[in-house]
Length: 79
Image 1 (cartoon, one colour):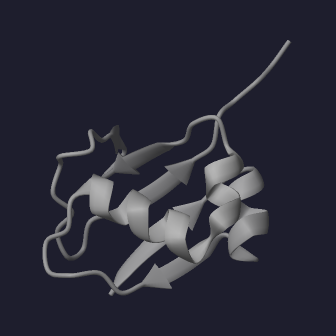
Image 2 (image 1 turned 180 degrees about the vertical axis):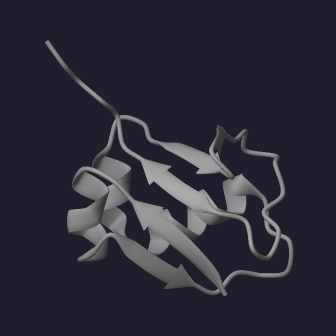
Image 3 (image 1 turned 135 degrees about the horizontal axis):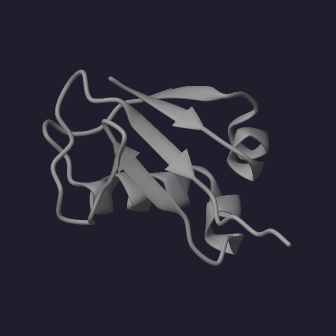
């Protein structure tokens, strides 16, 4: 079980600021994104979103380990 922290519009998609999700052992960030897009089709509407693992932006091939802190960060706009 992996706990995801949600920010911005993603909190609306998850109906809260955190989500527990079951993934295969040692999944990659890409596997997590595919699972999120499947479970929450609204995620596909975002132009892009970032995944942070342990407070660092992660690449698609990075492995997620048990106990890692995972954050879903939507696109940020400002003015």
